[in-house]
Every structure is written in C-alpha cells, then in structure tokens.
Length: 208
Image 1: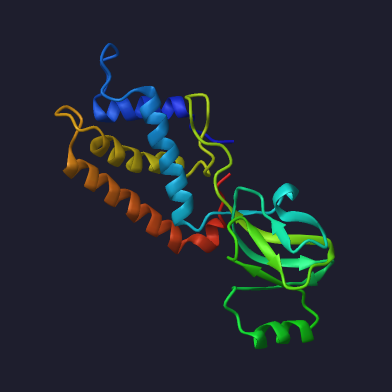
Image 2: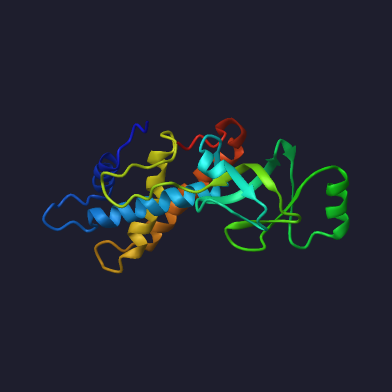
C-alpha cells in the first residue's frame, strides 16, 4: 500500500508552488493528475519497466499450434521463457540460421521477437504452455484524485520533481511559465533516476 495518496501529493504540490488561491488555481486538479501520471510512466520506463511475477494473464499463455503468440497489452519486454518446462531461445528477426539450428539441436523451441508489435512468432508452432519472464508498464493511469500512483511508496514523493518540471513548462503564461525552474526540477528527477539505477539490484523493481 502506498503511503502517499494523489490528494496528498496535490496538496504538497500546491503548497510548494504557492498555488493556493482556491478561486483561481494556476494548475487544475486534472492537470496535476495528468502530470503525475506522466511522471510515473516516465520513471518506470527509465528504470527498465516493472518485473511481473504473479499475474498469470501476462506470464502464462496456452498455445495452440498458431504461428503468433499474442502478448498482454501491458507487456513491453520478454526477457526469457519456457515452453512445456523447456527453456525457449528468443531471437531477433535478423538472427542467423546458425543460431536457430544451434537452439534446435539443444532441444530449445525458438521464438522471434520484434517481428510484429505485441506478438512473438514461433519458428515451429506447437501446442502447450508458454511461461514468460516479462517486464510491463503501469497498470492503471492516474486520471482522477482517487487514482493512486503505482510505483513503490519510497519513490512517490520524488515523482513531484517531474511534475514541477512539466507544470512550469507546459503552461505558456506569465504566472506559471518558468523555463529555468522546469530545468532545475527535471535535473533533480534525472539525478534521482540515476541513483535508482545504481541501486537497481537492491530495489528489484519494487514499484508496487
């Protein structure tokens, strides 16, 4: 469970930016939600997305002799797989025939990635159980103040750096536009992302 709600983050955002005039907010609640949603997507993307272990709708597929294997819409990368308990060789479409032959001689089924968006392609289709080692993007976007950030609670307050950067850049008016402040906050966000990348082994993508 996250320790920060979207409403609490909005309150902190308004306090720090001085946007406290309820009759004439510089940034609407909806704009804030949009910025925060973009921030969590960007954070997850820069850290290489989220390792998914538990959702069988994403990780487990029953194949039926079809050439194409359709991936869950949230899956952005397949790092490995087994088919009926056997390791699968996942290759790029440009892999040489030698790589394919080598995998087949080792008793490994062969899948190709990158041939078609949202799909894997069998070299030789077969029926069975395909279990994927995958990374995914965010499940639920932040559209309202009732929606909560999905990233791990320790990261949530640091998303505001990205929110500030967007807020000071996106609105082209004298009261809210400040390119220098936007750049400062974006640098803070990028610095934090770099710190997280260095600690990635320890974090193990604890985003949820």
